[in-house]
Image (cartoon, rainbow, N blue to C red):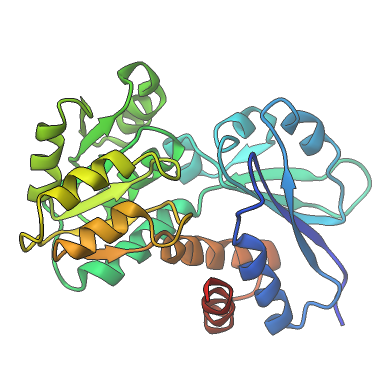
Length: 286
């Protein structure tokens, strides 16, 4: 038997999240009786009140968009990786004594991106990388690419005005990406075709126009590895177009799985039951 604890994934919207499938499977496999993990729709405006109400019954929170940067000012401590990246996707609720618990922010997205890309890369090295988008996950992706030996990347953004936080994160990390707009599309197409790795951190369906252009070019023996962090719908249009062109496509569920295993380890203090989590994910996707 174990002391019951609570955890949740917060975001807006959140109904599509597969995180409950992964964490609940982990709790069952670890014998954590009474532990619960729920999806909770929380906006940026609602986040301070939600975090302020956390007590010792909570083990932690998973955060998705748009909360990964909003939460930074609400925490007692932020782990070094999360601080340099400027994005927290995991909140650990520590201390079971009298009074308010200590809230610690961590980042498991970097681990998730690295592990997912390694599945597609095998032993290949990354020399040319393209990142689509400039939000919190893009900053984590730059840290992941640096861990894979690629401190330079082309970051293509929809609006340069919204790239400031990722630019500052890159400066803190000591990496040197080049920031470009997604227009003209021909330049973007040339960049993704020449890349060893392409990581899309765009919201669901935002990459569909690019997917249409890729599909129009036909199957040209595309050699790079794509990771589309979106996983709704499944497969995404970008993943389907990439695979049809001969490239290796790693789906967003793989990144989700790997970042969740780290969250389970941090929240429970036990090694994550990866196989049980993977089986539950595959069953949910069927």
